[in-house]
Length: 504
Image 1 (cartoon, rainbow, N blue to C red):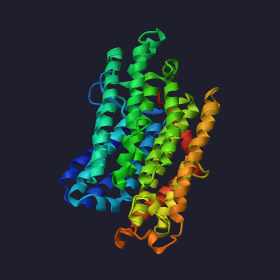
Image 2 (cartoon, rainbow, N blue to C red):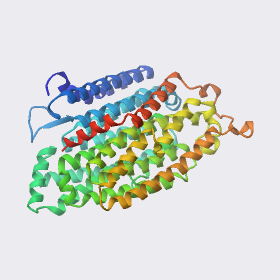
Image 3 (cartoon, helix red, strand yellow):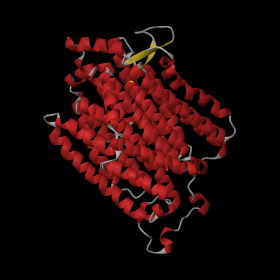
Image 4 (cartoon, rainbow, N blue to C red):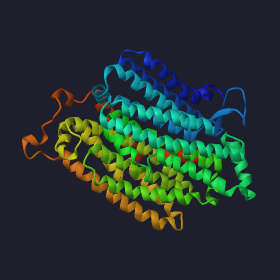
């Protein structure tokens, strides 16, 4: 593919990187936020342009050489329909996560540190786009480290004892995950002699066909899976997530759950498809590991969410369960399963960001993080109440919302398997039922009329309760996006399916 759009992936990666360099030089937090928002708008435009160009192009994907050395020794990025759609979705969610949480950010982070906060967001955005587009395993590792440090920084930006403890816990576990990724990369390079994905796959395919290096190759895949499971907070590697969400400012929670953990899953998808190949992964029996981890995460995350008394922690444990859905989709080893998993990545990104933004507004209305103190808060902030309701219904899997589509197609993908259907369908039903057990009581609570006038007296000043236009506009847009994903899903599913056909 030629033309200007050929350079769009490079611009998408480097634009937020340039913005991150500017941020520390700014004294005004408003200017820093506005520049970050403007960068997101440009990135959405570039992603849409890339998507359209790929749609009309006869070539399903293209590679972009970084530097002067061609494959297999150089560094390159690769763009196809799947990468373009994910970049567009992630950029849009990040835009709304920043815009809709500006009030909370100003309240929780001091004026002098907000430009640095937006610097970290831009670095995180850079690393996320690099993970989506890179075609080099070691480059992926570098940006995984950047992503980790930037994510820790935005958690610690809200300065208190809880965020410090959560950040240290997050950093320690993330370092373990990064170490396993680097170790697996080193093993893989010693076996194949390549770091670019396609050349490595050619060697791996030949070795597996000859019956060589079966055990080392299996171990490298398992190390990659565990490292990305730690990074994406899949059960039982999830312990950092609730603390990080529960104590961080609302913007950080929305970005972490909606975007950061998805970037690692996208990287794992690329490793399975583009480095090892689906046939090799199936032959080595690795899909069974993905399926087992996903099934366990679906139930464990849902059960743990039922016992939470604080709203943000409840949503965080819900994310643990939803990540399980994505891993189950990958573990089914079917085209439908991978398509359902990728759709759930996008649906969950939009929905979970909306839930955290709405939760932040409800917490401000209640003056408390505790669910029992939120009686009637949806009556005070109606838009936040509506958004939280839509998000909850979507996560439960009610028709007409985004979450239903991914669950429906996940069930359809399970039908294609002989054994997986007898495990996936009952677990999917049980998990959905438990989702309702912890979301519906919250909905009842926030819409209930206080029995006594003092039951819902806010602990925050009245001025803090008035939602901004930007927050309401953001929630309206996210509600519309969720409903659109739940109704007009066919074109996106078709585009994702075609993207997977050419991912390998």
